[in-house]
Length: 228
Image (tube, rainbow, N blue to C red):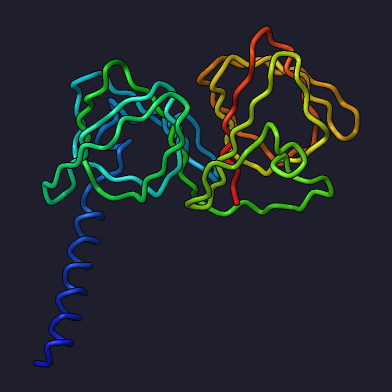
C-alpha cells in the first residue's frame, strides 16, 4: 500500500479511537458531581460551578468546549485519557480561561479552596441588533473584551465607587459578579431598577440596553460571557 495511504488510514483510525474514548467517558457533572454542579441551564447555555479543596482529585471526565472564570485562583495537574500528566500554570482570582473539551482528570495542587464558573454554549442565541452600540464600543474605558472563543465573548467590566456608564447595549449571556454589586440601571425607556448581588453570583441576562451607576461603597467588577 502506498505510504501516504497508510499514513492517512492510521490518522483516521487514531481520530476514530479518540472520538470513541471521548464518547465513552461521561460529562463532568455526571461522573465527577462532587466537583462539578450545574448552577443554571436554559436552552442556550449550561453554567457549571466547580469546586476543589487542595489535594482532591476527580474521576476521568469530559466537557463541552467552554469559557470560564476562576473566582479564587488555583492550580491543577491534568491527566488525559492516555495517562499523560500536565501541571498547568497557576491562575489567580478573576482570570478568564477556556477549555476545548478534551477528556481528563484533575488533581488540585492549589494552596487553598478553589472555585470556578464554567459556561458551555448549547445553541446560538437569536440576537437582534440594537440601535445603541455595545458596551465595548461606547464604554471601552470600563468594558474590555478579554477572550473570544467557543461562541462566547468574555467582557470584563469595572466601575469605581460612584462611577457610571452611558447608555449602552449588551448581548445575551451570563454575568458573573467578581465583587459585591449594588447598581442602579436605567433602561432606554427611562425605567429605573436597582440590582444587589453578592460576589460569586451568576445570572442569565437577556439582551438589554441601559445605563448604569455603581452605588456600592466599593469598586465593582463583573465578567459578562456574551453569546456571539
